[in-house]
Each structure stands twice: as structure tokens, then as C-alpha cells.
Length: 539
Image 1 (cartoon, helix red, strand yellow):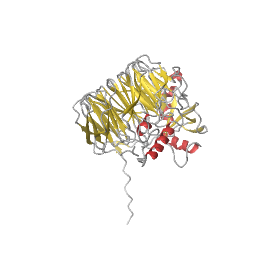
Image 2: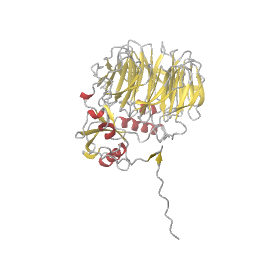
Image 3: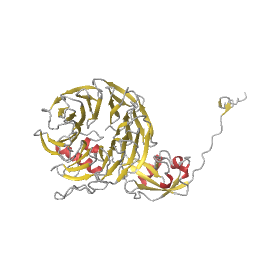
Image 4: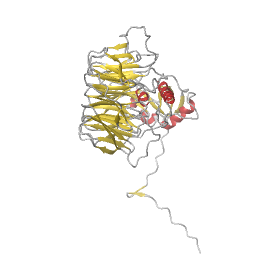
């Protein structure tokens, strides 16, 4: 019997047309790449000749292998960008850098706009910025809508560990919410007016609230009960609160409060009395920040158009910064995140004693200041921001020195066309984001103040911005009733989070959760969609 041959292989047909022949991949040209540090511009590795289509992940692996400054046993994730030549940045508000998200070939050489500035013969100077070893996945859906407040929610703040949330409202109460269950925890009643600000102590042992009644109240977040009576002394409403850093005073940190009455008061919670009052401003003090330089420094911003710097130990003035032309309404320190979270980091480790907490907090603080001094950004109703470095050596002025008014800003950050409503440094201090009434968010280099990009998408004033713990994401809220997360590789909206029915006044970001509150009297919590994987390493 003859052997039967198998039938011929059936030809795949796509809509009646035979399968097209596979297109061979075009050969990629070689280019010369020089990796440099974004901090100081120094080369991280020798210049290398490599294919232009090498992926961003391959560039990261190559840099980890080549650079002697990177520990081999623990690869560091990097972000890469190439600076555009100054002559090519002709459109005001256009990005000044090209972020490498795919490869140099795709993002630069084959890009319809970027290819005009570079050729294959150029040496590509790639600026490298180390990233967090953990990654936060930005939320994509509303996981809870929590009612309870009977008036607009004016302020919201996560606790340092991210386990609790505090909100303040026009109904004269503050509320505590459990983030694990996403349910109400306690109602804090006692103020006789709107609760304008809430501030957590960095060890999460106490919560401070400031009200329109001019009183400051301290609460135990575990029980929801007040700790003693109200701290009275201000004659007008409280505008801002700030705790003393844990690395300076781990057992009984003091509290600073600023007020519309032109003063700042520093309270001792051991004696429950005012230690001293700072009375140099001639108009409302809008913000107070407690820096960690030396034995402690207070920064205050006022409607008298000045920013003042004070010695927190003695209450004496150190600097007066006078460059703004209108009210100064917002301040940010590049150490804000580590001062706010104290000894708690993404590993979830909890200190067992005040001494251990002080040690951990000091390690985190000095890590941020290893390559830069403590920097300050002030934002004003004159549409501008200034970047300051009052203590280049991270040491306050000698006690005998007179107050200085000659501190010059490192940079003037211009571009907003209306008042600046809020400014915030990224947790690693490398970037700053500013929100404005001109409906935009702008990103700046945190160490030089240079403009990076404008994030457009809001159709009303932007009230607040917040950063993710890994410094890779920004969230903003505003008058248009939306919360938006932004992709800092493309400078476009990553997720639009609608749901509020009126203006959103406050937003905060912790781990993989965002919380927002506003005029519709509801707290909304935003989390990853059920189909997405969760955060790689929790903060």
C-alpha cells in the first residue's frame, strides 16, 4: 500500500488576504552616549558606543554595570532625560527636556519634533536621576465615598504611617478615618468655628487642629479624646500648624501655630503654655514650617510680602526674605516629607523607643541633605515663586549675628499667569510642583528652580498638589471638581478621577491611596482597580 502524504499546510488568511510577509527590522545606527549625574553633572561612567534602539530598561542595566558609584549587589532604578538646547526652546511653556521612556531612537531620533535638535553624530548627554527602590501604582477608581461632615471639607492629612486620615470641616468638627477599613473612626468636637488645619505629630501620637475660633486643640488619635483644654492666645483664626521634627525632640515635640493676628506662637505640650511669640510680621502669617537645620529653624510666610526665618530654640530672627511683590501664601521645604513622616519609611518598620525613633528620623533627614542643603520655595499672589537656600552649610547663623536681609534667592520661578495657590517638593527633593489659579500645574527642578514642564488638563483653578511616596507621580485637585494624576514621563494626565459634585479643596497621597475632600461635604478615597496589581512595596 502506497504511503499517503500529509495534506499541505493551510495558508493563514486575514479577511480573505494571505498573511503578509514579516517585515525585517531595520538596522539601528550606533550613537555615543555619556551618562552624567543630574545632581552635579559629573560623568557616572565612560562614554559608550551603543545601538540607538537600546531600550530604557537596557540603559538602566548598562549604567548599573558600568558605574563604579552604583553598588553591584543592589541595582538602582534610574530615570533618564536629555536636555534640549536652549536655542530650540522657543515656545514659552514648552518642555525643556526629553524624557527617555522607550529608547533614544524612538524618543529623539525618530520623533517628529525632537529629531530637529539632534543627529546621530551628536554625543548624547543623558542625565541620570536615581529613583526609589519601591514603586507606587497610582489609583484609578473611587473605592469609598464617606459622608459625615455637614459642611465643606477644608483640609485633609494622612497620618505618618498612612493608617489614619484626619479631615477638618466648616461644621466645626474634625474627623478621623481608618484607612484599613475605609470607615469613620472618631469625631473630634470642641472647636467653636471652622476647622481650618489639621497636622499630625510625626510619631502619630497626637493630632493638632486649628480653628476659626483662634484655638489650637490637641487630640489623642487612638481614643478621639482631647488632650487637655484648648491652647488659647491667638486673637484671630489659625492659618497653619507645624510640629517640631522628631530628630530634634522625639519625646515631647513642640507645636508652632500661625494666625491672622500677625503672630506665630510656639507651644510646649509639657506645660501647655506658650514658650514664645514671634511678632515681626506686619500682616497675616499664612504659613509656618519647622525646619531641621541645627537645633531647629522656623520659616514663616506673610501677607506683608516677606518670608522670615527664625531660630526655633531662642525665637530670634535670622533672615528676612523680601523679594515678593504681593502676599506670600505658600511655603515648601525639600525636607517636608521626611520631617512629616519622621522614623517611618516604606519598609513599615516601627521604632520601639524614642531614641530609636530619633536615630531613624535623623538618618532619613541627613540622607535627603547628603547632596543639597535645606531648600525653601515660597509662592505668592504675584504669580511667581522663589527658591531659597538660607543655610548653604546647613548651619544657622551665629548667635551674635544681626538678622540678615541680604539672602538672595537661588532662582525666580516664573510662568504662572495668576496667583500661586500651593507648592510642594517631591519626597526626594529633586522636583517641585506648583498649583495656580491659571488652571495649570508646573514642574520645576528642585535644586535649581529651572522650569521643566506644564501639566494642563484642569479647566478651573488648581488648589492643591501632592506627590506619591516614590516621587514618580503627582496628584492635583481644583475648582473643576476633579482629581487628576499625572504621568511625569509624558507630562500628560495619567488618570482623571471624577466623582465629586463640587470644588475639591484638599487632596493627599499615601502608599497607593489618594484621598480628597471639598465643597460637596464627602471624603472620597481612590485606590487601584481590582484588575491592577497592588503597590510593590508599601509605604
